[in-house]
Amino acid sequence: MVIEEENSVINNMPKDDTARRYNLAWNYLYEKMPDFKKQEIFSDPESRHNKELTKEVIKLAESGDDIPIVKSNYKKYKKLANKKSK
Image 1 (cartoon, rainbow, N blue to C red):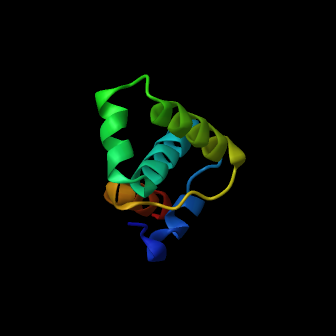
Image 2: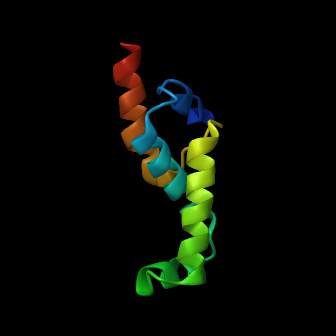
């Protein structure tokens, strides 16, 4: 689930914050996957789906585009944005 009203939180973070961008990208893309692919990723780390996810994460994280915040990242990045705005 993408948190629409809080997408601006990502804009408060530096674009060069690579670790955060990769974390956001992985969680965003993982949330969009069907359940059977999610299960396969954790049951077989060498699976085709895992390799596809990795490629997509790299593409998105390094693109410089805004990455929507998903529910799994919501609290962590909302807290971060609040600290930076103070």
